[in-house]
Length: 570
Image (cartoon, rainbow, N blue to C red; front, side):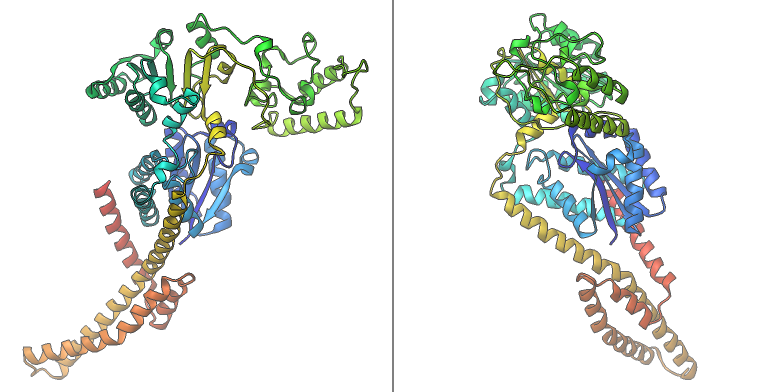
């Protein structure tokens, strides 16, 4: 087995990187085609969800495979290889199997135990089968992963360890209240009609909203989803075109968005315009942030005005919980030279006063060194590095939300600046990641981990045993040819044998050959199933001088049969 997976997820990369690396459907197709066209890989499958991008491949060289798969991911995601590499993880052979099985069981999900990942794995396999990039290894692997995931959900209480991403998001919007109590009587706008949006709409209907409006670029899909919701009878649903979103936003209490758009679907300005009563938070309403969390270039005396010579407008960048002034949203497009210019401005600006009357003076050498390091980093990677998960700060009360936004898209559909609008509560993938990071793990998780470990061992043993099967088949085929040749030679020497005598002799010779081959072939299958047992197939081919082409022909015939079965079952 030479299974390799290279990927990144919410566990290894910040949301900003995942957003930029997100692969749309066409990019996934091209990635698969380019992967199997590359030298180290013979099979490929892509698992791309809102919080992970993983490329699976059957490779013949580990190091070359890692280099090629990493390069392909960078090329097709549009994120530079140097920037992407620190966030990539690599799993090989049994570890790769263990990773996919854990993913299938929901152990690696943002919300532990969520079941939607099974549908996404199924879609990934179907795409690879359709493009003929999945051979026997990946077909077996992904189908077994689906079985393991279903087993985990049916045999354990892993569902109790976490909820679906939609349910978890609604719980965050409800701010501790029962979701059904919070949702009762509300009107919802669902943007998008894909699998996640459909799940969101069904969940909203179940928890008690009175009306659901579905907006989608493809009208047929929106209308079909609305029909399905209306068939339930508990909610009134209708479909609208995407250009009606602004109008519907004025009526909605809850908005859930999950589209495949590469840009923003809802800007902060659009939300503010649609909700005339919604006003930006004032300066005294914005929660404070620690000065130590800001870039040297962002230090500014409290309450001072922004200097017209400063290239960075700090006014709209007041910090909010979960928002760092080091983030791309704060300094988008700021060149290293601008950063240095701004740093120079700050260096000469008035300083905050201490509790006494003496101004606080920072060490110029330390400040210059920090600014230079930050500028150098920005010059290399093209942006100011983002500092995720700033330390908690004391929050002051915000206006009671009247509009609730849930953004489940990657890249994001809703402008993060909506956080700064009064009367609006936004929950997105990043805030969900923060909220679920310290979620308690159910006892059932340990049971699922044991299931995964057992299934990985069984899959590895079966794969190793299957590896030797073509050799055993070729050996038995060779033995049958030897028996047939000897019987033909016997007919030439003893032409007077009748059919009964010839049949008895033939059966006797076959039984002798079968008994001689039985013990070694059974034993070699057992040994091959153990770790490191792949060498037994080579030994068998050498000892019996088997034709490598005969063994390869058996393998091709088995793979062809497997492919036909897979296409018939998908």
